[in-house]
Figure 1 (cartoon, rainbow, N blue to C red):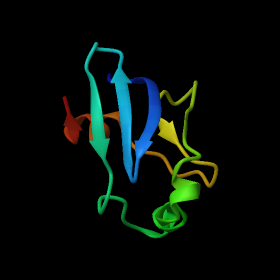
Figure 2 (tube, one colour):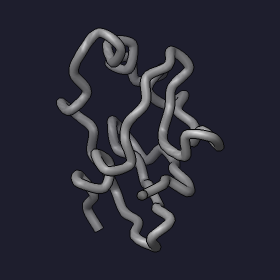
Figure 3 (cartoon, rainbow, N blue to C red):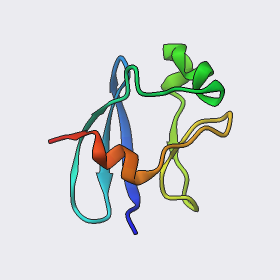
Length: 78
């Protein structure tokens, strides 16, 4: 299984993510967040409120939205 170890906001809808397998890089989520749970994330201020959940070990937002580590890695730009 793949887990997110850390993530930080870069700009716009771009975040930097590092994984437990040693890979890391930029993920541009612009246009990729679809569905009602992701609607609040269209507000850039709200988007920046993500954290890495210590139990789920992935990126999560206060409204319960989260992204699978595999999804993040599939969109990784080194």
